[in-house]
Image (cartoon, rainbow, N blue to C red; front, side, top):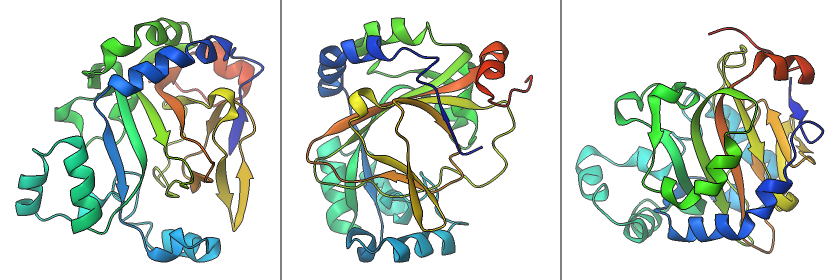
Length: 250
């Protein structure tokens, strides 16, 4: 399984109708900088070298581990953790030579005691409402209509104009076992999002999809800022049967 397009099963128009409210919510939210430590040639449009680098470093790099904070010593992190969003971003860009490709907006996120559990994002009891949650009440009303039997993390990914996102794997282990699902939403097809197979980009043309995150993935630069939404959890067995997505009882 690589990509499962879900446009024929999920009506994304209600999400697009919330565009004004979502943008206001994002503007009011506490942001988490997506600041990566990546080699210069990934920014220099040498796609083949970038893929080779990611594959060579795969035991170390993931969506989280590729963050510039990975390289901070305990002493450095002691100072970093108390900085504001703008201060954190400036510090990582200057001190760690980081590259900020966007921001995360956490609506629901992993509880502190489960941060080391890489599958915690798929469980309701291991995640909780963030301080941003009250900005998205209408969005949450819509999310609750989706065919999930359990909802965990809910996260916006915000990209910046004329900036490609860092290519990454979420994980390379056998996570696709029917117990962990998500839906990825790309309102208005604003992002040019792709998976990498070999050295080829395969674009996700649908506005709603489930895809295999053990493939390298990212998005091309576009001349505007854009957001996508991801909802983690476990889909219903009935919905998985209709769409051909693997489902296993937890």
